Image (cartoon, rainbow, N blue to C red; front, side, top):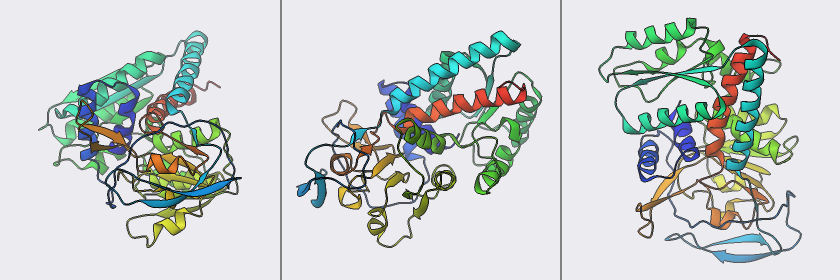
Length: 371
């Protein structure tokens, strides 16, 4: 699974110091476009108001730590609803566990997920371990192959071929990053499309982009973003949506999914001029660039819904770890302008691994013709 997904899903499993270190390493190895950095504090908020404008608003000045003040419009009456990805992911895992139990009773089949890990990176090893725990929690069988750093690409391809042919395996993941001497594209393309539960196979992405075609699998993090909108009954059809970031992992498939939901979609990226002018028109913003607090309150249209995919460590001497995790969106400011917002951690992160489990179940059902 690609690193931005990896970093996000780490939040699902543990808050221990070792896992926190892994999260930091995962972020530092994510290759994303660079935007100016800012730093924020977190504030929780409550109440539901999914309008496109505030009934009563006033201009105030707020600060993200060590960043310039920005004047923003905020709602006098409410703060944004917190979109609780951790709770939604828990509900989804419970639903998956019920379906897996039914599958086992009706046809005697248990879904299986195989992971191939090359090298001894601690962050990747931690993530693989956490995926196994997630599988165990819902009743999915997990299979794992660990190869040395100096293994050949042919060895990896051989293991993929065996899993492709193994009827007990319904999903295959190759843990990224791979060692530099391997061709990542060749390796990922070797996974048969019917078991591509990460949803990154070119045919899956191509079908996602085409009207009238259905991908076998949708990439887990973008799928989790849309699922959060659905679970909170947030309308998408006819809305203006902006996706910040155009990676193959999140940004591009998220834009395609929003378009499939009949939103009018714009993409903001590292070459976009005056991005805040575009985001201020958005009813829905999905941000996935990996830059702490880039999206300020002044970038947000009052009443907009904000989905924050970013997981960014920023220095904080008051934390025992020496740092804390923030998103791409300045939560302190944006939560006073938006109608709903995902927190970091606890928003999109837990949804990514829930969607991985969902895709694995979907694969097993499809292969065995179970509705």
